[in-house]
Image (cartoon, rainbow, N blue to C red; front, side, top):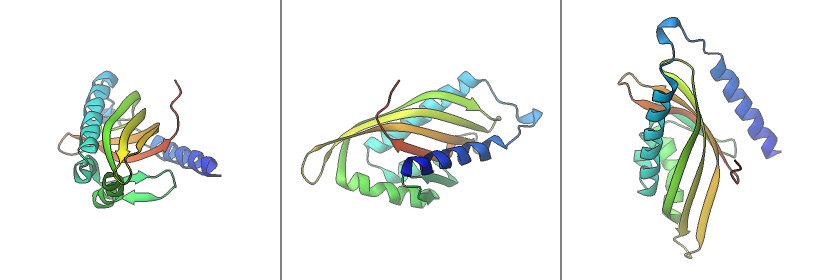
Length: 163
């Protein structure tokens, strides 16, 4: 049931984003240039995550950014995103985090989709046991007025990553 709900949410996410028709003046920039910029932002995300800095992770989102959790719950706005991540940082010392961009799909000069996968490892602060996670994600990026790419919407699911 949860898998069906996740699939339905992903399809809705893609459908809504696909309704945006780029105008000629907002034609997509070079996809490879966009991918390079997004990969740099993903490295910033991973660094903030490894530093257990929920505020720095949240700052990578647009002001009205939202993160859809695997449970289907939304975290809306930077404050909610940061607060939602804090329990993970309070319970785990993360030692590795990697986000791999597999595909970038330009929608316009100011919006693009990213599809990728992630992995993280760490140890529980309560009992020292090793914890690891991996999965896939999709992100709708928006270039803000300041020219910086920020996460506008994201959705991920923990699952073994298969090539």
